[in-house]
Image (cartoon, rainbow, N blue to C red; front, side, top):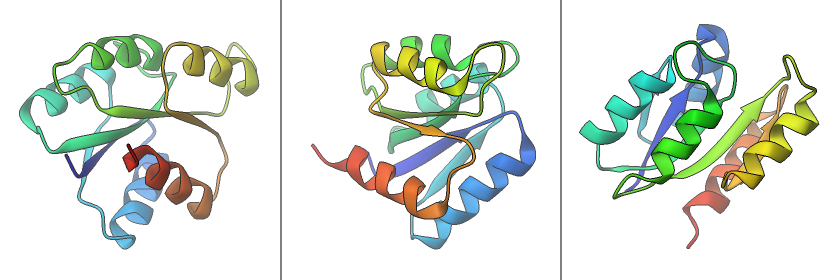
Length: 123
């Protein structure tokens, strides 16, 4: 499991994250909803880390985190959020309690992203 899946319904954010990870040499898959992300996880067994937003249509990041964690080859999940109905700090604390390997508050820089991904690939 060496690939990364980036999940965000905001095309611009997803593109920035994907480009940063690809420049760092990672194989990256993309999804714009939680449901689409579950499909990618089930079709791409090499995905070992997921970077996911919280607020998305059809399946939010919390539901995705819970479902993905139950998969036979459960990936390590990094949750990112810029807030919404709750402040980002509260959202990220909830994600950590639900099992996120780490969290990133938007906006974040490439160095923060890459550090979280490197740490997630560690045993």
